[in-house]
Amino acid sequence: MKPLPAPPLAVTPHLHQALEPLPFAAPGQADPLLEAFLNGAVQQLCQWLGTATSRPPLPGLSLLPELEPRRHGLDGTTLLADLQVLMDGAYNPNHPGALAHLDPPPLTASLVGDLVCAGLNNNLLSEELSPSLSRLERGLCGWLARRLGLGDAAGGIPASGGSLSNLMALVTARQSRGLQHRPDVVVLTSTDAHVSLDKAVLVMGLAPEALLRLPTDAEGRLDPQRLEQALTDLQRAGRPVLAVVATAGTTVRGAVDPLEPLAELCQRHGLWLHVDGAIGGVLGLSTVHCGGVAGLGRADSVTLNPQKLLGITKTSSLLLLAEPDALHQTFGTGLPYMEPSWGGAHGGECGLQGSRSAEILKLWLGLRQLGLEGIDQLVGEAIARRQRLEQLLHAAAPAGALSLVSGPLHLLAFRPSGADAQACAQWSQQCRAALLAEELMLSRPLHQGHHHLKAVLGNPHTQGEHLERLAAVVARSLPVPSALLVPSHG
Image (tube, rainbow, N blue to C red; front, side, top):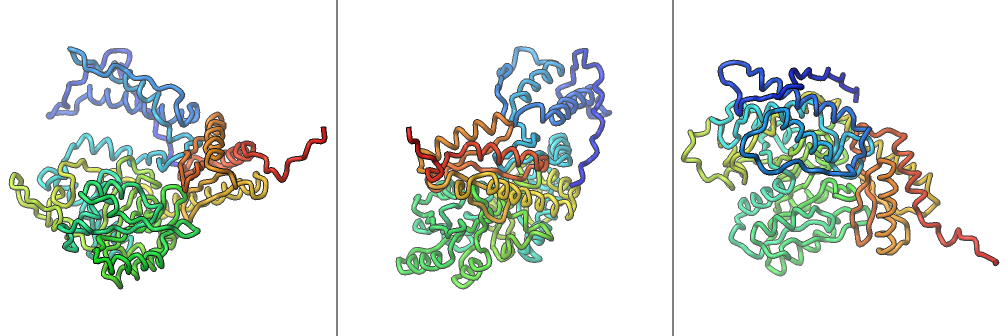
């Protein structure tokens, strides 16, 4: 993407003096003390973001200021100084070497959206507490759902993270299929599906075995033939299926389940198909890359997390449905202490959350800042970085020394070929430490019984030089294959 011009740092007046903003902004005029206080905070944040390369992704030291409030409240200068202590010990996603997790740098318009959202302090519980923002939320959820192909009547609701979106999807599926009183229901998914599904089963009061995880194929995907056999076995046992959960972007390798065949299978059996697209679902918004999640629009519900790749500040997750009325039918309780909704249903009756901030604001601003071409570019460049790193690792490491697993997205995991679990654990610790010394941060997930190193290539600041350094460190860390050892003759 073309870099946005850097705005000039806000001039913070009187920082040499104590800032003493009132606890609440003045309601009758612009509050100069609040403005100075905000300017000071903005200046600190711009400085923190703009000096990211001078600090490693993972801070070496984390300090805490005083935790408890004092007898008398503090002035703004002291509050900003305490804030700086926390900022100095924070994880640093703006660093080009921050490649460990699905946490990219924040989109600048999303930062502004978060600030304004906090200032407005509207509550998406009901429309009279958020009149324009309720309309914005309903409209943007509809656009996103239609963009993914869920249909002209599609829509949804934001949620605080993908775990909550997945939970609400399963609760809605159970209610819609009339299975809320059946304790023997089954949710079918793959062994590589997200752990939030285990939490969902727990919260729904189901036994752990209600989540049936099926083996994946060689590419880490849910196998439709195994799924069909499991459905046949469950039908013979008289156990109803609550939902099938496919994954568009598994956590370690970024695999995408075969959505088209799974949708065909679910349609034939009359089953609810939920797609956990927290990682890869944003490909469905792209004109160029939507083929990577072909079939996504045939789901009954989709979890979408723009925070994972598009840089929308946390949290930004949505549950999108082909028939969004099912949300109100599932979660509607009535809000007798509020005026009636003029748009169909209050936000607080369309999900598990009651009071909610207007997180839709930062998503709306961020998407408008990017545009459709910007989404295409962000997604395309992330995938290209993964492909480039894959090439570099193949070139730097001895032939056959590395076992790499990936999918069509921007995630890549690897470990030494042929190494046992203990050797992989030791290698991954040592190699990660060597990478951190180079200010390159990868994560160390346990996948199929072996520790891997995982690179998430969604950081737009990461350049070719960083990937080349990464590949070189990994190559130096690998044990020499026994076939290459020269025997000693004394």
